[in-house]
Length: 219
Image (cartoon, rainbow, N blue to C red; front, side):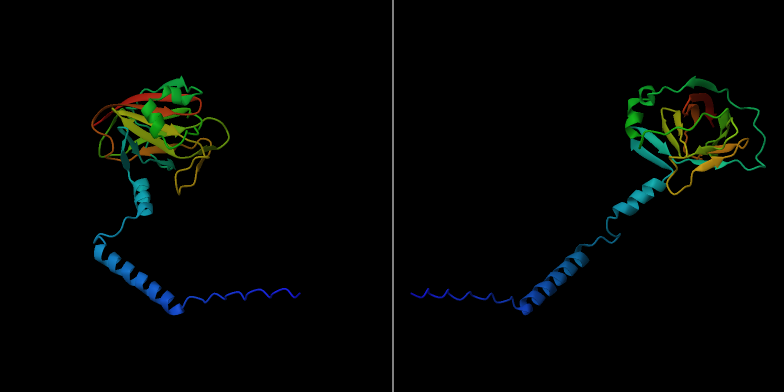
């Protein structure tokens, strides 16, 4: 007895391309209408551009009442003026291994990453008084016979305390090459003008082996 032949399989008919084209055109037309009708005159939200602008800002406020300042680290020109006679008295204490335990807890929370600190300078020259309209400049020199690598200088302020973290060459500033400081050459650590309010301040410079402190006045 012959087996009955299987029923023929129904072939699916493809969707008509006409309706696909109509759907695409309708979507484009609707999207264009909504975009043109409700677009803000000043332009759309651009998170990347806004983040870039924040990174370039001289001051970033609102960080648990701390203010972060943009800084520069540069080799001092050979014709730099002589050391000022009103240089502040600088004290030194050992930097603890667990640096976060020696800092205010709020500052630990706002620092972008744990600092990789550079060696402490053998000499720090800071003026006892600085104009609010002039940059705060620190002059540093290092001991030894080998070059010293310097990266970004973190700077945070609160309650007229200036906390500075001098980092090594493994932590350069964004879009800035690390600085290689030859023996016997000074570097300038600068805080921009107009960022410190008038009054009495304490400066604190954290380095790998020592923490340096001094007092100064912003006039």
